[in-house]
Image 1 (cartoon, rainbow, N blue to C red):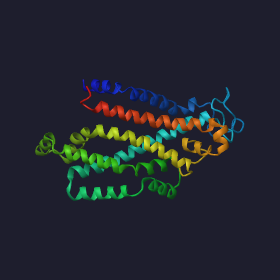
Image 2 (cartoon, rainbow, N blue to C red):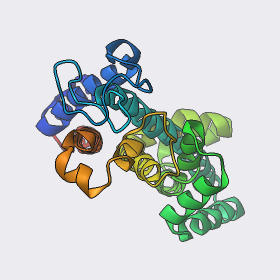
Image 3 (cartoon, one colour):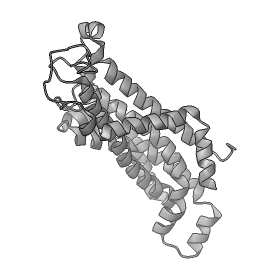
Image 4 (cartoon, rainbow, N blue to C red):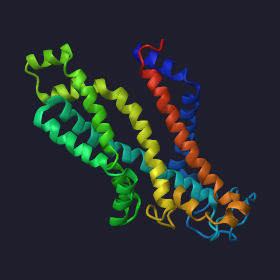
Length: 278
């Protein structure tokens, strides 16, 4: 019954529902890029910077690679970075937030001061420095973003745990002699899922934008491997911007579509988890 109510509240958010289906279609295309892509994304298959034709639906880039094939593979990279970085940052943030909120005292103070210290650094500067130190690549990018995005999640979880630990059912579990691990992961964590999922959608969007930005700056995914960011990097000259829009419009629109879809899904989740939404 509760699940039906959740789906009904979610479906009432029209943009969120539409975004969910759009994201599913894009994800399907990205997952099956090796099947759907008409050419190898790194192979020179046509003329340099040729306009779209029946053979090359989105044209070719400056070195003759198929733009559509690179777009599919680049979207796969963005989705991988967005979701895997969010999983890592959520795991770290949830674990530290649970410990800080539940045990309190000196442990809470140490974890929160460390969290404040990480948050005191300019976010983009921290990412840029980490990207400059470590060898650029897909997994480097995922790990960097995953271990930089966790402080807000930790603070969010801690705030919820401070409230939940005073509930009667948690106190009853303590009196019954249940272990701390049982209380944390069976009693408290399930009741923090809603804010975690809602905030997690924004982390996915931010991670995808960060990957695109770092790849655009040449500090993320390196060519010839395709990513939406380095596709834009190769199309930044004025002549390309004005005369060859097929080189920058597809990756730019794909980034916009991905980020907007994830954000609208987050809005829909917020409404769906709200019990006041009848």
